[in-house]
Image (cartoon, rainbow, N blue to C red; front, side, top):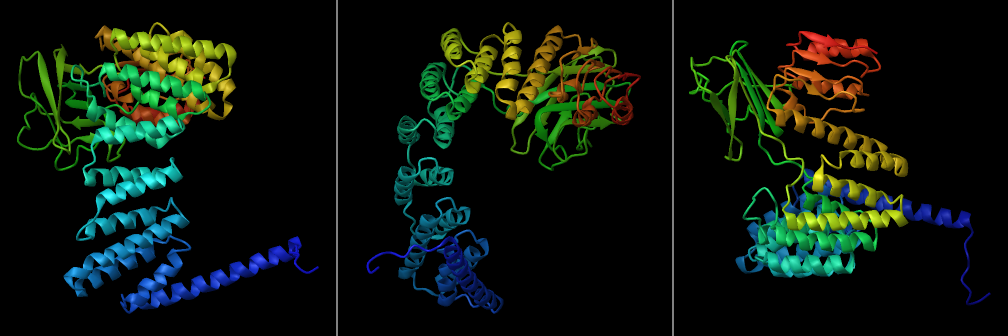
Length: 518
């Protein structure tokens, strides 16, 4: 009938779409063919800009075409009069905005925009900040735009106070905003540093307010993880800062080992590690990675030539690639042995006021669990809060939470098992370090360990008991760090005891006693 839209059958619709795709593909092949020919002949002209523009407006993720546009602009700038150079950059800036409307998360388009501004004679940085504000109104979780905003804000000299206010506004509008929470964690240490304890990222007064904000966000939607992740940062459960973790020197065996909280490369030219008992103070010591990796947490020095000395300690000094110096005092533990361990921080140590806030939050979590006993984020947060309040006193309750999480959230069972292994090792390792008797064995037996963590601290131990665990074959690689271990028990810890025994003997050269049974 006249005036009525004909409804295509599914077969007709499929054929129509196929024809459209073929036409698009043909235009793309034709355009790319012409572009590549011009590239070979180095024709960086207006036609090249037009050809690349046609394709990028429909698909802005072709890095080659953006590179060609940059080459074209560089050539045109050399040929253009001074008064018109800015216009070339402004035109391509507008072009990237068109491309971002096609794909607001195009890495290539955002990168090209940065390049334009860096090379333009008179970039308008405040205009870029305003553009980010506009884009984040349309999609407040576009992490590409958040990254770009951090870049242009620095160039535009926008104050951290103004940016924190912007973040707060975005979070209050929508708590489920990972990028805004993350940006907040970068701004707060600038505005509210902890002057009394630099190891804490922000002042305790501000921390109390942030914890309250997190609680409001988390309890508004307990199933959303963004606020819970931010809370982990507040509680100190993030990557440890670089530092010397442990050191041991055996003058009789002429072996030294140094371990770090994070992987480092001691072979870099700028990096230097020395200790005042070494004869070789005028040349760089030849340290070897325990795992043969360029970056490693444990490093070994063999054939150590030491000075005759009756010193009771030796100072270990490490200069990193950024020029920062770290030190550790190693004490004499026997006539031929110096050992030093810097006790790891398994989270922040809080004052009474913050601990009261954490206890109130733990109580709130427990109340929520009465109504939603299988809320995974609440369970995990309860465990993290107990660990922050009193990790030793709450250890059994923390493990019970992790055990329950394995059944409540089976998709992440491996993660909860890893946390169980990590926190069990922390518990026993802390006890061993507090004893300050490093000749005594490190008892890690019967903990249901599947993986080994904090291997750098075990590098100075004489005896390690890892019996009655459930170690996977992946854990075997960690034994390369046990440089000074003489006695090692792996009884009932591996399914394939023979394979484990063979590999451990190869990795632990100093072993005198090894127990491996199934």
